Image (cartoon, rainbow, N blue to C red; front, side, top):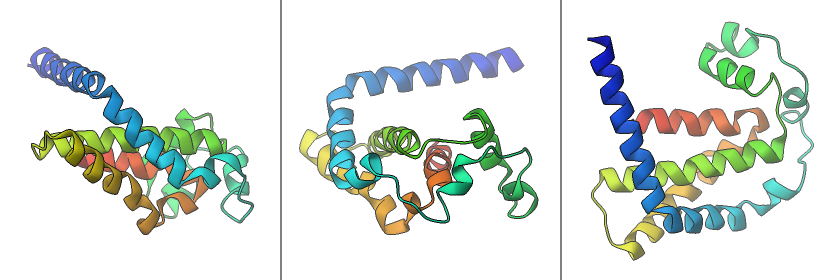
Length: 151
């Protein structure tokens, strides 16, 4: 029973990777839209009270688990080595957000390239309205949460 479930999961993941490979030019376009829109977050270090806690090594479990109940974010930070570099996390977050946009639009059945780029751009830029990227240590965690909601 467990092997069949794992086999099905493997087939689904391979199909998803195959679809993203076919959409690589759309993915690149969506990634570049985000690079243009969020260029200041890639190229500068925003000094604030959310940057410095991200550069310290966090213990596990940290305040996020025992104080806020966000244990999975602690796992993500632990997988990054206990801390993070703001620009690297931003690149990874926007990479994942472009993947999320393509997955979401394919789930909706949208096929035209112009529609994919327009709606994908809106999907990729909505984290600015939700203030996702103002917390340096949360860049990746919020986008992974979006990916889990899609799957």
